[in-house]
Amino acid sequence: MTALVISASSDLGMEIARVLSQKGCELQLTYRSHEGKEKLESAFGSKQGVSILEFEALDPGSSWELINELEPVPDLVYICTGYLGDHQLALKDEAEMDRIIRSNFSGLTPLIHGLANQMEKKGGTIVGISSVAGERGRQGNFFYGAAKKGLTTLIDGYRHYFAGTKLRFVTVIPGYIKTRMLQEKTPGFLTTSPEGAARQIVEKSMAGKERFYVGPIWFWVMMVIRNIPEFIFKKLKI
Image (cartoon, rainbow, N blue to C red; front, side, top):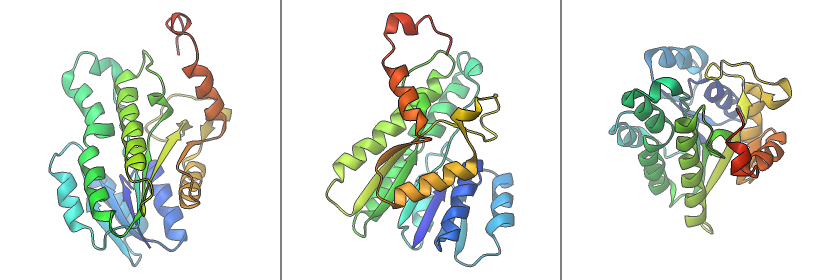
């Protein structure tokens, strides 16, 4: 079985790749920077059945270049790309706003669509890792949240479109994961380690789950947040 991990050099991507390797998968791992490439080569470069490839969501041509390099066509895909960005900067700087949207959603759409076309005949599973930030717009991160909402809707829509075929789409909605991207202090009972999150994501997606939160408590947390009346929500600093 061959597994493709997009942004495998991220904290979560690295852990997902390790779990997949332990399960005996051949790996196709992508990086976005020279530093990311070196990390992957250090961790996985000596292992057989590992390909290390470049993919940059900000580059319009990168999706098709990657798809043309994939040999064989993967059986499993994990989309781990995430860029929180600087929300305050994005309010003033259109380039930062665009980077957030493209990194988390619009730059991934051609890749997901191309992979779906490649994998449709043989079947397989494409896992999109979104975020609870996409559940409701909040004042502190609504560009990131909007992009993640877009990714959630895209994966949900593909799952509906391909229902009854051999191609599965899995929507993963993590809460707080203690990665480099999340620098702020978060409540321990709401925060999952990258290792714990990776194991949940791989095991549940392989077991046939189609849509789930990472950390069961987040289902209840987000149910509450989604149902707060708007006139109250506007007064909250969350």
